[in-house]
Length: 155
Image 1: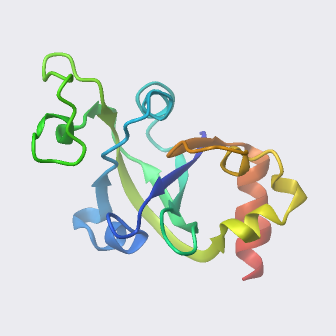
Image 2: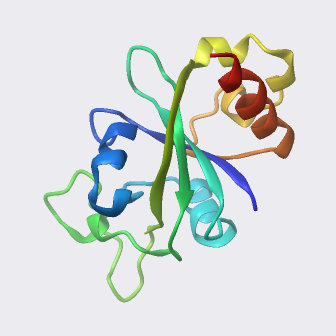
C-alpha cells in the first residue's frame, strides 16, 4: 500500500461532500498537471490511502482520509466544452487526463498547513516543499505514521 495527499478546493469538493456522496465515492476529476496525472494513472493502486487536503481556502489543511477504489479511467470533464476542465486538445480516442474514484474513510481533526510546517518530522514532506503546487503527492510511510499516529491522536 502507498500513501498520498490529494488536494481539493472545498468549495468544489470537500471531505463533507465525499462523506455525503452515494456510496461515499466520488471521481477525483480535474487534475491538469502531468506529474499528478501520472501518479494517479500509473502509480496509485486500489486500496491506497490518501489524506484529503482542503486547498485554495482561508486555512488549507488535511480534513480527512480517503481510499483509492477504482482503476484509472478518462476524466470526462476534459471533453465537455463548457466545463472549466475542458481540454480542446484531448480526444475521446486518445484522452490526456485520467482520474480514479476515491471512497470516504473518515473525517479527521483538521491539521492546518501552518501546523504541519511546525514539525521537523515533516520537513521533507512534498506538500511542504518550496514552490510545490502539485494536487497529488506521495506521502512516505514515516510521514503517514507521524500524522495519523501522533498528530491526529493528540487532537
